Length: 99
Image (cartoon, rainbow, N blue to C red; front, side):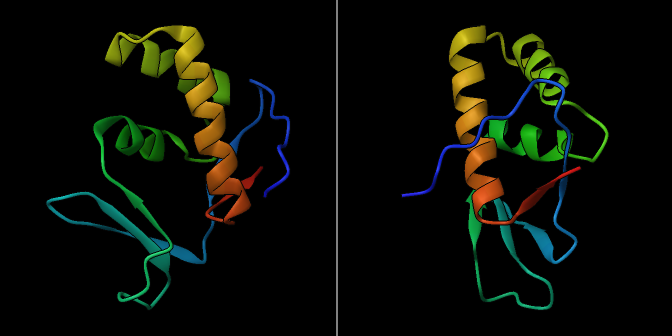
């Protein structure tokens, strides 16, 4: 089991330059560079697509959360928990890096 890390709203993340994202009609496949057959993560819904777009090395977690609350009209507490879990998962799998 992965250790839970504590991230703050002012933390900023960027995509690992050693991965690529491949957009398909069904979702986004995340794989190591130059490898189209190895999927290390799969994004399959509109919220995860938007989070992926917002992870750009500039946006804080707080900014990402605020954007999602406005765009998707979701409960802020639920979103905060889900966003933390999603970020933790991407971070543990080395898909994103903390700036």
